[in-house]
Every structure is written in C-alpha cells, then in structure tokens.
Length: 399
Image (cartoon, rainbow, N blue to C red; front, side, top):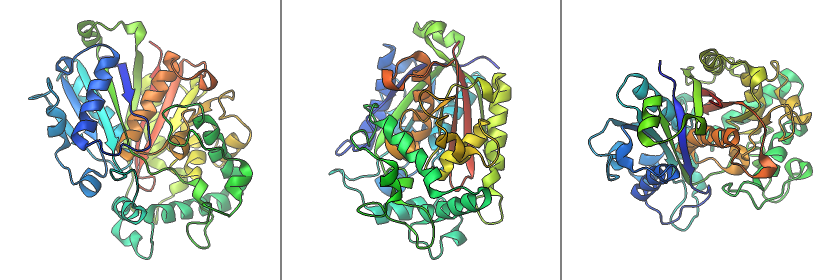
C-alpha cells in the first residue's frame, strides 16, 4: 500500500458553537483544513465525515451531501460514517481506504458534533437518551443515564479486579485538567481541579449511580466542536505543493469491533481494542516502547487506565498506576492526553477521533503550546465507540 501522510489539521475551539449551523460547521472544517496548507477544496479527491448524533440532536442526515456542498467537492466520492464515539477515527480510516484503493491522492476526513443548543445550553436528559442508543437495547433497562451507568460498572469491576482505588483513577482527571489549562482549544481550559476536588462529594461533584464509584469529575464533557484532517499520498503531496518533510506519516491504522452487549464479555481485556492496536503497530513497524506521545479515549477515568494497557505501556491491571506514578504526564515516559483528553478538552463525539490524530500530528510537528510539548518521533491514538465495542487505532511517525 502507498504510504499516507497527514498534510494538514484544523479544529474549532471545543465548547459551544451556539448559532453555527451544521452546514456551516461542515464548511468551516473543510475550508479550515484546506487553508492550513493554502489549497482550495477542489484539490481534494475523496472525503468522509463522521457524526454520531446528527439525526437525533440536529435533525440532519446525509452529511456527505452537505460536505459535497462545499464549493469544489461536488460529485466526488464522499461518505458519512457512524461508529458511535469512534465515528471520527472511522472517518480517517474511510479516507485512508479510499486513497489505498486508488480513488484519489488527496482526501479529507471531517468529524463534528453539536450537542448544545444555539444558546450554548445542553439538555442533559436528551443527550443521555440519544447516547444510550449506542448500546444493546436490553442493557438500557433501568438506567437513567445509560453510558455513565455502564462505565460505572466497568469502573467498579476494574477496581475490584485490580485492587485500584477511586483516588488512583482520579489521577487521570487531575492530570488532564492540568494539561487543558494550556490548550487554548480545550473546553475546560479555565477550570482548576485538584485530587481533593475529584474525591470530595460536594457541589457539582456527585456519584452518578447509587452504589457505584463513578463521579462527575470522572466523566468527559458534553461538547460542541469540529475537526478536519487532510491525508495524501506522495503523488498527492506533490500536486498540492506540500513537502513530505512537512507532514506526519499515518504509518499504521486498524479497526476492530466487539459485540455491542457488554454483559458476557471480558471488557477489561478489551479484545478488539488490543487487536486493533497491535495491528496498527505491526503495520507501522513500531513497538509500544517507541511511542512518546498518545491520545486515548478517556470518556471516563477508568478508560484512561484501560487505554494505557491497550497502548502496551503497562501490563494488564497496571494502567491506573501509570497515571499515579506520573508516567503519563507531559514530562513522563509517554505524554498521554496532553490535549486535556475527553475529560478536560471535551468530547464532541464525532470530532473526537479526528482531534486525537490531529493533536498527535501537532505534537510531532512541534506545534502545541510549549507547556504541553513532548519530544517524540512516534505517536499513537486509541478511539472507542460504545461500551468498549468499536476500536479505531493509529500510529503516526515523523517522515
């Protein structure tokens, strides 16, 4: 397969898009990514767009048609993809597959979500309901907020299985809030959170499900946002005038899907996730030890711990300790979620997977704020959808 390169990345500030319409969001993502390297959208051959809640929250389907409405993209191979919270990562893989098939040499992947209304307010009950659609129907019964409930169960199982405490997992949130204050695009950039804040039940911080350990600060943010990323072959780079040394290679990528039902699966072992991550490593000719920076899907703090194990940075059951020991910090063994992660940067569902890859590319380019910059030659991402169901993994390298 021809090597593929990230030529450009662009994203909105995560938080509130207010009166920005979905067609405008799509256009801003495309045109913003193109402007990063001073090209017009007409130079793009193929595209893909990911969103999880376009129909349920925005009453908008056929997003590929909106993308084709951007001047220069009409009549080109474009598709919309939905893989729950892994929709953005899936959009990148969709473009990579198109380029690998020879359908073009330049492609764009877009992800977005608008989860708040035009005043920037959210309907928590509605958002909880529509996100619950991405679970097995039988597992929604008796759960007011389906995803927090399911991951509260995962958190309880992880703690019981590995002897981990709530305080151990709280280090994920504290580390990420600490990173977010230096990321100008992070939703929670103006919020300070200490270990005591995460562990103390008062004010906004409460247990979300009676009898289970998940608290408000263990959760990612309901967020508006968009992101766009341009991929190209070497021939494509030459056509759009981008030098290979100014790109980041998408050296490895893979996707795997486990059954949607959480019950009956060994979710802590995350079989599909490990398979996808190891396949991406094999494709890239890389090892976990080489990865110096990573963005992982910390929809809840327990996933921040499990993700370390999926990355291969810690053995089974040792992911939480990696955070406690400071190994995931900017100056640690591998800077993990230096963007602030989903917990503090924000989680605009369809944009998340694109933003993970885009932030890692910025890290390898040396284009993140100095306080967050990690010196690395290899990066990895791990994007999930559902109750550790769909997994999209990538490995990036300096060319």
